[in-house]
Figure 1 (cartoon, helix red, strand yellow):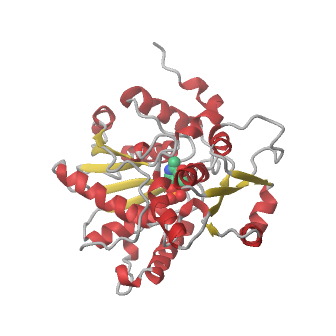
Figure 2 (cartoon, rainbow, N blue to C red):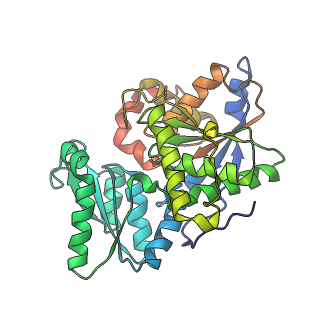
Figure 3 (cartoon, rainbow, N blue to C red):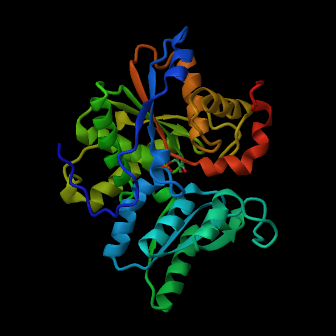
Length: 348
Ligand SMILES: Cc1ncc(COP(=O)(O)O)c(C=O)c1O
Protein backbone atom coordinates (compact mmCIF):
# COMPACT_ATOMS: atom_id res chain seq x y z
CA UNK A 1 0.00 0.00 0.00
CA UNK A 2 1.21 3.50 -0.83
CA UNK A 3 1.08 5.58 2.34
CA UNK A 4 -0.13 9.19 1.95
CA UNK A 5 1.94 11.30 4.33
CA UNK A 6 0.89 14.77 5.52
CA UNK A 7 3.22 17.80 5.31
CA UNK A 8 6.63 17.32 6.85
CA UNK A 9 9.42 19.70 7.94
CA UNK A 10 12.84 18.30 7.08
CA UNK A 11 14.82 18.03 10.32
CA UNK A 12 16.35 14.55 10.46
CA UNK A 13 19.15 13.09 8.37
CA UNK A 14 17.28 10.24 6.76
CA UNK A 15 17.56 7.40 6.05
CA UNK A 16 19.57 6.50 9.15
CA UNK A 17 21.94 3.52 8.83
CA UNK A 18 20.88 -0.06 9.50
CA UNK A 19 23.86 -1.94 10.93
CA UNK A 20 24.43 -5.54 12.02
CA UNK A 21 25.67 -6.07 15.58
CA UNK A 22 27.69 -9.16 14.75
CA UNK A 23 29.82 -9.41 17.88
CA UNK A 24 26.82 -9.24 20.22
CA UNK A 25 24.82 -11.57 17.94
CA UNK A 26 27.70 -14.05 18.05
CA UNK A 27 27.89 -13.86 21.85
CA UNK A 28 24.21 -14.76 22.11
CA UNK A 29 24.03 -17.25 19.25
CA UNK A 30 25.27 -20.16 21.36
CA UNK A 31 23.70 -21.73 23.39
CA UNK A 32 20.70 -19.37 23.16
CA UNK A 33 20.20 -19.59 19.37
CA UNK A 34 19.65 -15.84 19.22
CA UNK A 35 18.88 -14.18 15.87
CA UNK A 36 21.17 -11.85 13.97
CA UNK A 37 20.67 -8.52 15.72
CA UNK A 38 20.59 -5.36 13.64
CA UNK A 39 20.36 -1.81 14.89
CA UNK A 40 18.50 1.01 13.17
CA UNK A 41 20.61 4.02 14.08
CA UNK A 42 17.95 6.60 14.85
CA UNK A 43 20.39 7.98 17.40
CA UNK A 44 21.95 9.48 14.25
CA UNK A 45 18.89 11.39 13.04
CA UNK A 46 20.86 14.53 13.95
CA UNK A 47 23.62 15.37 16.42
CA UNK A 48 22.15 17.29 19.36
CA UNK A 49 18.54 16.89 18.15
CA UNK A 50 19.16 13.16 17.84
CA UNK A 51 16.73 10.33 18.42
CA UNK A 52 13.23 9.13 17.73
CA UNK A 53 11.58 12.41 18.69
CA UNK A 54 12.92 14.14 15.63
CA UNK A 55 10.97 11.86 13.30
CA UNK A 56 7.77 12.81 15.14
CA UNK A 57 8.71 16.50 15.22
CA UNK A 58 9.02 16.63 11.42
CA UNK A 59 5.25 16.16 11.22
CA UNK A 60 4.42 18.11 14.39
CA UNK A 61 6.33 21.22 13.32
CA UNK A 62 4.82 21.12 9.83
CA UNK A 63 1.38 21.03 11.50
CA UNK A 64 2.33 23.90 13.85
CA UNK A 65 3.32 26.01 10.86
CA UNK A 66 0.15 25.06 8.97
CA UNK A 67 -1.88 26.26 11.98
CA UNK A 68 0.08 29.55 12.12
CA UNK A 69 1.66 28.78 15.49
CA UNK A 70 4.81 30.56 16.62
CA UNK A 71 5.34 28.58 19.83
CA UNK A 72 5.52 24.93 20.84
CA UNK A 73 4.55 23.96 24.38
CA UNK A 74 5.44 20.48 25.51
CA UNK A 75 6.13 18.52 28.66
CA UNK A 76 8.17 15.75 30.20
CA UNK A 77 10.62 14.81 32.92
CA UNK A 78 13.48 17.10 33.84
CA UNK A 79 15.79 15.01 31.62
CA UNK A 80 13.24 14.60 28.81
CA UNK A 81 14.83 13.79 25.44
CA UNK A 82 11.61 14.84 23.77
CA UNK A 83 11.71 18.30 25.37
CA UNK A 84 15.37 18.76 24.43
CA UNK A 85 14.68 17.72 20.82
CA UNK A 86 11.63 20.02 20.72
CA UNK A 87 13.64 22.96 22.06
CA UNK A 88 16.32 22.51 19.39
CA UNK A 89 13.92 21.72 16.56
CA UNK A 90 11.82 24.79 17.40
CA UNK A 91 14.97 26.92 17.26
CA UNK A 92 15.86 25.46 13.87
CA UNK A 93 12.34 26.02 12.54
CA UNK A 94 12.22 29.63 13.78
CA UNK A 95 9.65 28.89 16.49
CA UNK A 96 9.79 29.37 20.24
CA UNK A 97 9.60 26.50 22.72
CA UNK A 98 8.27 26.31 26.25
CA UNK A 99 8.94 23.10 28.17
CA UNK A 100 6.86 22.17 31.22
CA UNK A 101 9.05 19.85 33.26
CA UNK A 102 8.42 17.46 36.12
CA UNK A 103 11.12 18.40 38.62
CA UNK A 104 13.64 15.84 39.79
CA UNK A 105 15.23 16.77 43.09
CA UNK A 106 14.51 20.48 43.20
CA UNK A 107 12.35 23.07 41.48
CA UNK A 108 14.94 25.73 42.17
CA UNK A 109 16.59 26.41 38.83
CA UNK A 110 19.14 28.68 40.48
CA UNK A 111 20.26 26.08 43.03
CA UNK A 112 22.38 23.77 40.86
CA UNK A 113 23.94 23.78 37.40
CA UNK A 114 21.59 22.11 34.88
CA UNK A 115 22.91 18.85 33.41
CA UNK A 116 22.17 16.66 30.37
CA UNK A 117 19.00 17.47 28.47
CA UNK A 118 17.99 20.29 30.82
CA UNK A 119 21.23 22.10 30.05
CA UNK A 120 20.48 21.77 26.33
CA UNK A 121 16.91 23.11 26.84
CA UNK A 122 18.44 26.29 28.22
CA UNK A 123 21.10 26.49 25.52
CA UNK A 124 18.41 26.21 22.84
CA UNK A 125 16.65 29.23 24.34
CA UNK A 126 13.56 27.37 25.49
CA UNK A 127 11.47 28.77 28.30
CA UNK A 128 11.66 26.26 31.14
CA UNK A 129 8.99 25.83 33.83
CA UNK A 130 9.76 23.29 36.52
CA UNK A 131 6.92 21.84 38.60
CA UNK A 132 6.98 19.61 41.69
CA UNK A 133 5.84 16.06 40.88
CA UNK A 134 2.46 16.37 42.65
CA UNK A 135 1.51 19.59 40.92
CA UNK A 136 2.72 18.31 37.54
CA UNK A 137 0.63 15.15 37.79
CA UNK A 138 -2.47 16.91 39.09
CA UNK A 139 -2.41 19.97 36.85
CA UNK A 140 -0.74 19.09 33.53
CA UNK A 141 -3.83 19.67 31.32
CA UNK A 142 -4.50 22.95 33.16
CA UNK A 143 -0.88 24.01 32.75
CA UNK A 144 -1.13 23.53 28.99
CA UNK A 145 -4.35 25.56 28.93
CA UNK A 146 -3.01 28.34 31.14
CA UNK A 147 0.18 28.78 29.15
CA UNK A 148 -1.68 28.65 25.80
CA UNK A 149 -4.00 31.39 27.07
CA UNK A 150 -0.98 33.32 28.29
CA UNK A 151 0.51 33.35 24.79
CA UNK A 152 -2.82 34.06 23.12
CA UNK A 153 -3.24 37.19 25.28
CA UNK A 154 0.13 38.35 23.96
CA UNK A 155 -0.82 37.86 20.33
CA UNK A 156 1.02 34.56 19.99
CA UNK A 157 -0.30 31.13 19.13
CA UNK A 158 0.97 27.90 20.68
CA UNK A 159 0.71 24.29 19.59
CA UNK A 160 0.48 21.94 22.58
CA UNK A 161 2.43 18.71 22.12
CA UNK A 162 1.58 15.83 24.48
CA UNK A 163 4.17 13.78 26.38
CA UNK A 164 6.74 12.34 24.00
CA UNK A 165 4.93 13.79 20.98
CA UNK A 166 2.84 10.63 21.08
CA UNK A 167 -0.58 11.02 19.51
CA UNK A 168 -2.26 10.59 16.14
CA UNK A 169 -0.06 13.33 14.64
CA UNK A 170 3.31 12.32 16.12
CA UNK A 171 2.95 8.66 15.15
CA UNK A 172 3.45 9.60 11.51
CA UNK A 173 7.15 9.73 12.40
CA UNK A 174 7.32 5.99 12.90
CA UNK A 175 4.85 5.05 10.22
CA UNK A 176 7.52 6.57 7.97
CA UNK A 177 10.19 4.96 10.17
CA UNK A 178 8.64 1.51 9.62
CA UNK A 179 8.60 2.05 5.87
CA UNK A 180 12.26 3.07 5.95
CA UNK A 181 13.30 0.09 8.11
CA UNK A 182 11.50 -2.46 5.94
CA UNK A 183 13.09 -0.97 2.85
CA UNK A 184 16.56 -1.05 4.53
CA UNK A 185 16.09 -4.68 5.49
CA UNK A 186 15.04 -5.63 1.98
CA UNK A 187 18.10 -3.85 0.60
CA UNK A 188 20.16 -6.04 2.95
CA UNK A 189 18.36 -9.14 1.70
CA UNK A 190 15.95 -10.04 4.50
CA UNK A 191 12.50 -9.46 5.96
CA UNK A 192 12.82 -8.80 9.71
CA UNK A 193 10.79 -11.13 11.92
CA UNK A 194 11.02 -8.70 14.83
CA UNK A 195 11.25 -4.95 15.37
CA UNK A 196 12.12 -3.93 18.92
CA UNK A 197 11.94 -0.52 20.55
CA UNK A 198 11.95 1.08 23.99
CA UNK A 199 8.47 2.27 24.90
CA UNK A 200 8.09 5.35 27.10
CA UNK A 201 5.05 7.30 25.91
CA UNK A 202 4.01 4.80 23.25
CA UNK A 203 4.22 6.79 20.02
CA UNK A 204 7.23 5.06 18.53
CA UNK A 205 5.68 1.65 19.08
CA UNK A 206 2.28 2.88 17.82
CA UNK A 207 3.84 4.23 14.62
CA UNK A 208 5.89 1.10 13.97
CA UNK A 209 2.89 -1.15 14.64
CA UNK A 210 0.59 0.86 12.42
CA UNK A 211 3.28 1.22 9.75
CA UNK A 212 3.89 -2.52 9.58
CA UNK A 213 0.19 -3.24 9.29
CA UNK A 214 -0.26 -0.57 6.58
CA UNK A 215 2.70 -1.99 4.68
CA UNK A 216 1.25 -5.50 4.89
CA UNK A 217 4.39 -7.05 6.39
CA UNK A 218 4.32 -9.81 9.00
CA UNK A 219 7.07 -8.21 11.14
CA UNK A 220 6.21 -8.35 14.83
CA UNK A 221 6.75 -5.06 16.69
CA UNK A 222 7.52 -5.34 20.40
CA UNK A 223 7.91 -2.48 22.81
CA UNK A 224 10.00 -3.01 25.91
CA UNK A 225 8.30 -0.80 28.49
CA UNK A 226 10.50 1.53 30.55
CA UNK A 227 7.87 2.99 32.89
CA UNK A 228 4.23 1.84 32.78
CA UNK A 229 2.94 -1.73 32.51
CA UNK A 230 1.75 -3.86 29.61
CA UNK A 231 -1.95 -3.07 30.11
CA UNK A 232 -1.21 0.67 30.00
CA UNK A 233 0.74 0.48 26.74
CA UNK A 234 -1.70 -1.90 25.05
CA UNK A 235 -4.34 0.79 25.67
CA UNK A 236 -2.01 3.63 24.68
CA UNK A 237 -1.12 2.10 21.29
CA UNK A 238 -4.82 1.52 20.52
CA UNK A 239 -5.56 5.11 21.59
CA UNK A 240 -2.80 6.69 19.45
CA UNK A 241 -3.92 4.72 16.41
CA UNK A 242 -7.59 5.58 17.04
CA UNK A 243 -6.57 9.26 17.20
CA UNK A 244 -4.68 8.87 13.91
CA UNK A 245 -7.77 7.32 12.29
CA UNK A 246 -9.98 10.24 13.33
CA UNK A 247 -7.47 12.87 12.23
CA UNK A 248 -6.50 11.30 8.92
CA UNK A 249 -9.53 9.58 7.39
CA UNK A 250 -8.31 10.47 3.89
CA UNK A 251 -4.83 9.05 4.45
CA UNK A 252 -6.01 5.53 5.18
CA UNK A 253 -7.63 6.10 8.58
CA UNK A 254 -11.24 5.78 7.38
CA UNK A 255 -11.37 2.11 6.58
CA UNK A 256 -8.51 0.99 8.78
CA UNK A 257 -9.12 -1.80 11.30
CA UNK A 258 -6.27 -2.29 13.74
CA UNK A 259 -5.31 -5.89 14.40
CA UNK A 260 -4.84 -5.63 18.17
CA UNK A 261 -3.06 -9.01 18.24
CA UNK A 262 -0.15 -7.18 16.60
CA UNK A 263 0.53 -5.11 19.73
CA UNK A 264 3.23 -6.66 21.91
CA UNK A 265 4.58 -5.16 25.11
CA UNK A 266 7.11 -6.66 27.51
CA UNK A 267 7.06 -4.99 30.92
CA UNK A 268 9.42 -7.26 32.87
CA UNK A 269 12.44 -4.98 32.65
CA UNK A 270 11.18 -1.68 34.04
CA UNK A 271 13.17 -2.30 37.23
CA UNK A 272 12.70 0.14 40.12
CA UNK A 273 10.83 2.63 37.91
CA UNK A 274 11.09 5.28 35.22
CA UNK A 275 14.66 6.53 34.81
CA UNK A 276 15.85 4.17 37.56
CA UNK A 277 18.10 1.39 36.35
CA UNK A 278 19.48 -1.74 37.96
CA UNK A 279 23.13 -2.72 38.01
CA UNK A 280 22.51 -5.24 35.22
CA UNK A 281 21.18 -2.48 32.92
CA UNK A 282 24.38 -0.47 33.45
CA UNK A 283 26.37 -3.62 32.69
CA UNK A 284 24.46 -4.28 29.45
CA UNK A 285 25.13 -0.68 28.38
CA UNK A 286 28.84 -1.17 29.08
CA UNK A 287 28.78 -4.49 27.16
CA UNK A 288 27.35 -2.80 24.05
CA UNK A 289 29.84 0.06 24.30
CA UNK A 290 32.74 -2.38 24.69
CA UNK A 291 31.68 -4.97 22.09
CA UNK A 292 30.07 -2.76 19.45
CA UNK A 293 31.11 0.83 20.19
CA UNK A 294 27.40 1.59 20.54
CA UNK A 295 26.17 3.94 23.23
CA UNK A 296 22.81 3.26 24.90
CA UNK A 297 21.21 5.17 27.79
CA UNK A 298 19.94 3.92 31.16
CA UNK A 299 16.43 5.41 30.81
CA UNK A 300 15.27 3.98 27.47
CA UNK A 301 17.49 2.13 25.02
CA UNK A 302 19.80 0.51 27.60
CA UNK A 303 16.86 -0.79 29.61
CA UNK A 304 15.14 -2.10 26.48
CA UNK A 305 18.28 -3.70 25.07
CA UNK A 306 19.03 -5.28 28.42
CA UNK A 307 15.52 -6.76 28.36
CA UNK A 308 16.04 -7.97 24.81
CA UNK A 309 19.26 -9.80 25.73
CA UNK A 310 17.55 -11.38 28.74
CA UNK A 311 14.67 -12.56 26.52
CA UNK A 312 17.12 -13.98 23.96
CA UNK A 313 18.67 -15.97 26.81
CA UNK A 314 15.21 -17.19 27.82
CA UNK A 315 14.67 -18.47 24.27
CA UNK A 316 11.94 -16.04 23.16
CA UNK A 317 13.62 -15.41 19.78
CA UNK A 318 14.83 -18.95 19.12
CA UNK A 319 14.15 -19.79 15.47
CA UNK A 320 14.12 -16.15 14.32
CA UNK A 321 16.76 -15.15 11.81
CA UNK A 322 16.80 -11.34 11.89
CA UNK A 323 15.74 -8.88 14.54
CA UNK A 324 16.02 -5.09 14.32
CA UNK A 325 16.48 -2.99 17.45
CA UNK A 326 15.55 0.65 16.89
CA UNK A 327 18.13 2.82 18.62
CA UNK A 328 15.94 5.74 19.59
CA UNK A 329 18.76 7.95 20.92
CA UNK A 330 18.90 9.44 24.41
CA UNK A 331 22.66 9.48 25.02
CA UNK A 332 22.47 12.73 26.98
CA UNK A 333 20.78 10.60 29.67
CA UNK A 334 24.06 8.84 30.40
CA UNK A 335 25.74 11.79 32.04
CA UNK A 336 23.29 12.58 34.87
CA UNK A 337 23.55 8.86 35.83
CA UNK A 338 27.35 8.70 35.70
CA UNK A 339 27.58 7.15 39.19
CA UNK A 340 25.66 4.03 38.10
CA UNK A 341 28.42 2.99 35.70
CA UNK A 342 31.26 2.90 38.21
CA UNK A 343 31.43 -0.89 38.47
CA UNK A 344 31.21 -1.41 34.69
CA UNK A 345 34.69 -0.32 33.59
CA UNK A 346 36.53 -3.00 31.67
CA UNK A 347 39.72 -4.41 33.25
CA UNK A 348 42.19 -3.58 30.51
C1 LIG B 1 15.74 7.84 23.80
C2 LIG B 1 14.33 7.44 23.82
N1 LIG B 1 14.02 6.20 23.43
C3 LIG B 1 12.75 5.76 23.45
C4 LIG B 1 11.72 6.57 23.88
C5 LIG B 1 10.36 6.01 23.89
O1 LIG B 1 9.63 6.47 22.81
P1 LIG B 1 8.08 6.75 22.96
O2 LIG B 1 7.96 7.90 23.92
O3 LIG B 1 7.65 7.08 21.61
O4 LIG B 1 7.48 5.52 23.54
C6 LIG B 1 12.00 7.89 24.29
C7 LIG B 1 10.97 8.81 24.78
O5 LIG B 1 10.09 8.54 25.55
C8 LIG B 1 13.34 8.33 24.26
O6 LIG B 1 13.65 9.57 24.64
